[in-house]
Length: 527
Image (cartoon, rainbow, N blue to C red; front, side):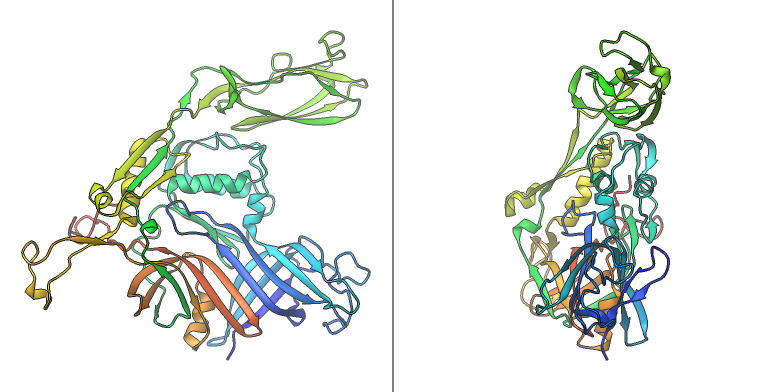
């Protein structure tokens, strides 16, 4: 029995129902999404994509040439750029449907020529593409907020919401956040999600069904394996490489300095002409009053006051008639800048001769670097360093804990090589000694539908699931988290998957009354 795909479009508009177009989908369907990479800083997903080819010839379901040529005279009703796509796969074992992609069409490329292939290549992107194109305009500096509260705020700032959210409760409360955001950059929301996730040391990604997930620090600890691949994988990318281990971790934290009184954080440096009846929007980034080349954040911003903070005149030199009251002024005051929308209702040309923003400056100029090192390993393997930036973490103590935790995860594991014979024949310090090894790093695993059980795993497993990998030749026998999913449908019913993997922290953590510290558990980084 085969894994059955279904491709659907919202041809009638958003939330107005799905239309099944599977009959017009040719071979070559592919889906890719999740977090690319498995290092300490790989914690936020990039844009996920879905690609497929549609039949644009008279042999399609409508028997119409040009049915999927956007803008053509015979284009299918509702088939336009931006409509949503949903892809599901049916598990033949129990007929359950699993949604593996939800997104919007971002590209349609028809093949020209009456006697050509008459195909249309379609590309869709998931919600992370929306986040990558959205700004943080108007969002105030967040004061004493948990990481999940800030993530929820950022998601809500994107015009099109995801299908669903699963936001874990953050472990970190940040004294200040979003003060270093830049609302003049188009990809600011995704950048800020990444910065918050790094500062929490969590994960943020989208599942196949469109749910945006935020995992707080340690949400992945002490979880169980969802499945085990015991020599049943089709391919395995594994290596034991010095580049995969760490002997020193440095973590950067960002203590802030705050003004005690309000200062001018933005000042218009030139006169702006506003024609009769026109409206303009000006962005005013906050800068250090003592060094206007340095961007800063702001808190306790003062609502702009006419004449004091903004002024318009009939002459560019500031003379003539005061037109301030004859213009409409709308201000959006954010954590890193002010947005002023001004409409000239004066019946004559107006000149903005003054525009400023006042508040308490928030300065991120003096970072702290915390370090954890295993000198013994460095002497044996050579130095292997990494630097992790936690942009919204202000406590150097938390940075020190994070450095130690990451070193424990990525350092070589300690083992005892025994002498020949049984374990009982060896005695530590007499016939054996401690040494280290770096377990093989599994970057990815590929699964083919060779059995009904594997068919189920191909469609059921998703980013964030923990899987156990056992493979005899490489000696792999360990747990990993799925970081990314790459589904390939080479032909109808023939679906394979490649999972990008990250090592699971399988260590037990100390629980009062239930664990023996230093024997079967260790202290967790829970600051």
